[in-house]
Length: 280
Image (cartoon, rainbow, N blue to C red; front, side):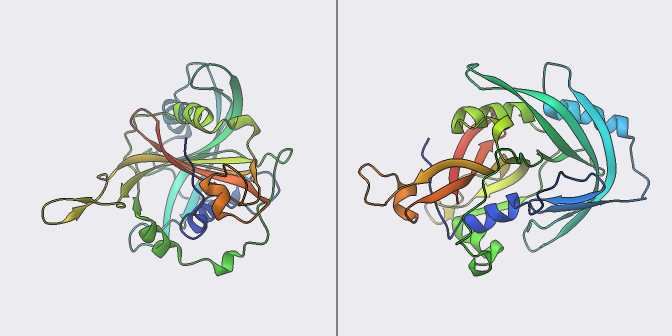
């Protein structure tokens, strides 16, 4: 797998998606993770918590029984830009799934992870699945990088050649399949990661474009992909850029930078890896 380090293009997006400022356990009544923040609402749910649990089981896709508990019915704010819409508000069931089994794709290792799932109240779709911070293994990001100096997120996404939209309800891959592919590709055990954040989204990869007879068209048409982000995990120490055999990530980063995060994109069809980027 070839990974790249792009401070200008990918860092602002990934930091927005995976940044979790609180060192405390996630509160089901109110809290935040990545671009999402939520609070309990008194609005009457459009379907029951037991229905949400059933959908969550389908999205998890595990063969072994998993304990899923109904948490709270919450109002969620999503800071992800969808086209010209810079903020979205929706309602969802927030559920907890304990000891979800995950196997490395080649079957060489197995693990278990606790997850929280957001099931959208409008269409019962999976909006996100994420873990709490693993404070026992958490590694802080590079404090020398100022987030206030980073460019506008929307412009950065466009410059890097992709557009993001909300996903379809019907998914081909499950959470457990994507986690297995992620473990196999990155060699990061989900149970030992600082924090994982997964979202299925419709993505159009526009760069590099394919040239036709009269115009350039996107590299791939809009399709469902899974964004998998890990933060607070020591992935590698980047040495001096003059090191023999240094990778592109090493050449573009400052000496002795600790890569503590990773962004990975997986195709919903077959949970196939598409691209990955180290994050400081």
